[in-house]
Image (cartoon, rainbow, N blue to C red; front, side, top):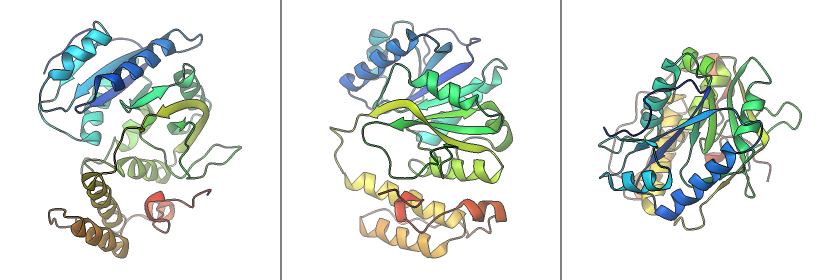
Length: 282
């Protein structure tokens, strides 16, 4: 594992960024937005950790050139979203001074006030578990209450995880390599009595202009959705997604044994709206 920068710090907020073969232009946009964030009045002190899941350490020089002294680590394998962030979260919360961990997608561009608003919303209620930034200008169609700001689940694009939640239920379920791990964490948080909310003024542009729809992405989405259905006991949903996954050329795999979720988990799970996992607003 390679590392640059301090091994630990007392900042109350850690930002975790997981990389995988990202283009330089993408990281340039993100680093510029983080620099603007740091200069914004009222933004809490934060530290950034980069964990690279790429096949080689080629991005190390890019990250250090864009952000001299950056804390860069090379995982040596493609760990997936959840495993990588869990590693960083565990390290963050091992420091008692850290109150919040924020997952940040490398193709996101933060508004300068995004982090400040995210933390402000997280600290507004003691029961807070998760708070997501609001995607702008293209929002997710899932709903949120205009007064309480509660939402059925939080996107992992820019997602604040509070220390209390991690101590209570842990991080992401590492069986999800990519996709649906944020839905699962949100449902577990709600079932455990934590508040799951949107911070409407914490804006992030999820830069997907150059992203192509690929068979690999479609397979991953359906594989994770099948796992989610099996975990929460909806075998019909799980089998339907598994069938789609196989039809897209996915390698056969066995679904985990159908679970019998607790009443609290069963109450928050929603498989009636396909991949939205909640009744959409449009």
